[in-house]
Image (cartoon, rainbow, N blue to C red; front, side, top):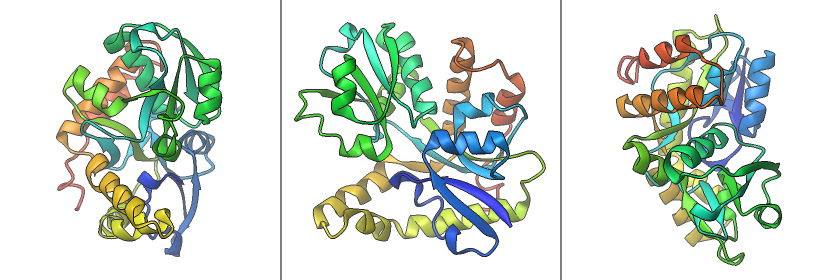
Length: 273
């Protein structure tokens, strides 16, 4: 039986759709940072892991080709919320459940926003975060549901900011396997789940909306139009650019082997889709 760690956020549901019913799989769902910890510790075989963790493992992991949680522009669920103009942000609270997005906001602050704030780790509660910092990073469902207007904040979408800075998509997470684990059968298993999950997006959105038809419509739009599930050529270029900047900025160890592996990933067609 293969031990798979998925992310519990809404945006990950189409990638892991139906895996809990597969007798070959022992599935658990966690926040992204916990998925990374479990993979590094060897407590799962395959994980939907923040991409910056590719650089932080003690081994060179195998990336499942063709699948990702990514965006081309607006993502909606990874955002910086601020009560002051971005150029005046001096302190920034970071969502502890995040890893790739923490790296993203640090890269954008340096290379795009031109600021160097103090970073403060925090639980994902926007009201409390803005009590201790000028701005706050939230990811996933808490970012979608954050009452930022009522708190007098402005929302800066980090998918949009990354595209403005680089012209590329941003990749937040990929399926990652420990060395020696990944087989063609596992790749096909995960691609089958993603195909089924995309077809089930209306069902997934309706379940999260709990009977609210308007919210279900909004969530379906989010899953179809904000989130990209293909690790295509443009997404791989965006991923390579992010990993390069993360290494250059000292956010992760220098791992040219990982960068070469990402650049050599096969196309979705070659992955058996």
